[in-house]
Length: 144
Image (cartoon, rainbow, N blue to C red; front, side, top):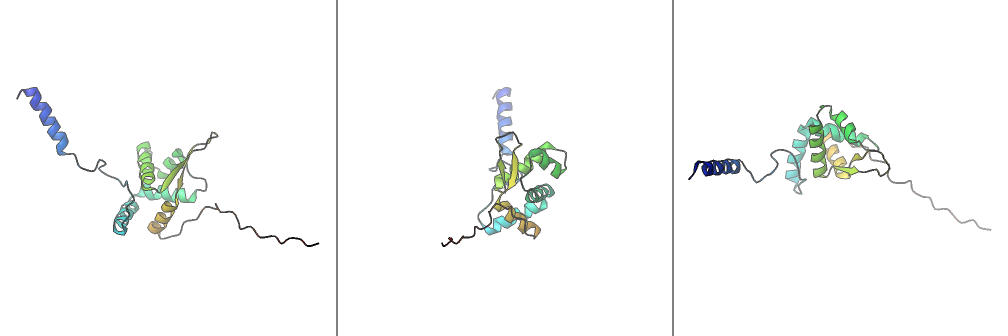
């Protein structure tokens, strides 16, 4: 085999040797359906101070947090870490991205699954958003 072909072959073998079936080496990317697997994900999530800090701040925020606000909450001074946190929480279904069409910055908001998960991690109930209107009382018709 010519030396150039051997180099290409050995490079390909080296690259394939380290390849694993999981394309992402670290991180939580899917919320599992099984309870045992969910507990494992919760333990990993609770171990990450950045993920818990972001979820706690999002739970306290009524309107959600912009990307720069999430960056401030994480307090890591790393846009890469903010991106990693947001992608993790979004892929797990804990956070949703809301876009404002009238010039305000887009915001990340905690989903119901995210609220339930955060309460399981912290052991404290999270404040629910006041999204339901108060009940309408039935008016009695006036009699003449």
